[in-house]
Length: 271
Image 1 (cartoon, helix red, strand yellow):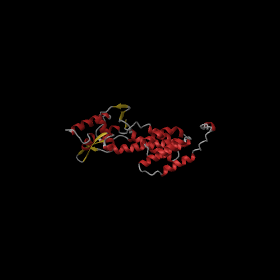
Image 2: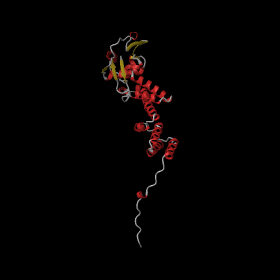
Image 3: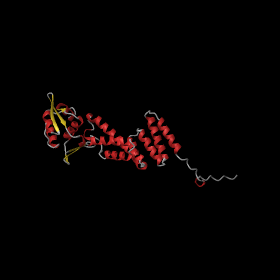
Image 4: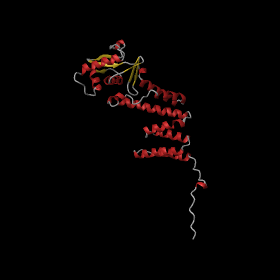
């Protein structure tokens, strides 16, 4: 049984035991995982060494493949005998592929939970949505695919996973608000907005929570900051201005100052 975790620095567990991999093997494992199909030895070498393959790379690559196969449990190399890291041929090219059940990869489980949670949110099953999205977020350990975060072959998948993460956090906050927990999520929404300041959906959600908590001055400030940011980027501010106006209209009028709070006028000089 393999448990492959990529929502953060790579972690590999085989039969419940952690397996330590060196830098080259970590990159190789992620290359094969992201490829989703057998990769030729030539292409795999290009990906691993980022176009700077060492002299004699075919022999070195075969050695790394052997060590990674052993780390994954020493399964057979033959694709028809149930191996995890398989060797096959496409024409005359030797190819390597990874065969791990989808539910043994945390990113796959994460995506499934996010999808189910967002569907539950759309179906107004807010308690279920909050639970599913919280379960998804518990799998997130930091920068996804951290070991290859600077490699171009991983950029698209990193962007996709980060988009799912943002959707999960936003969806969970929406579910919590619908469950009447708007005060509890204000701090988290502020952190999220600081990370994604141009997300007006988040901004509107935060403003709504602040108004429900009768923090109208803070709500107006969040609107104002959004308008200023949009103007800096040359974006349309119509919807934010309408939101700001709604906040100002909803805020109770300021109470008149009591006579005791008014400053005492200086005495009038006698002629």
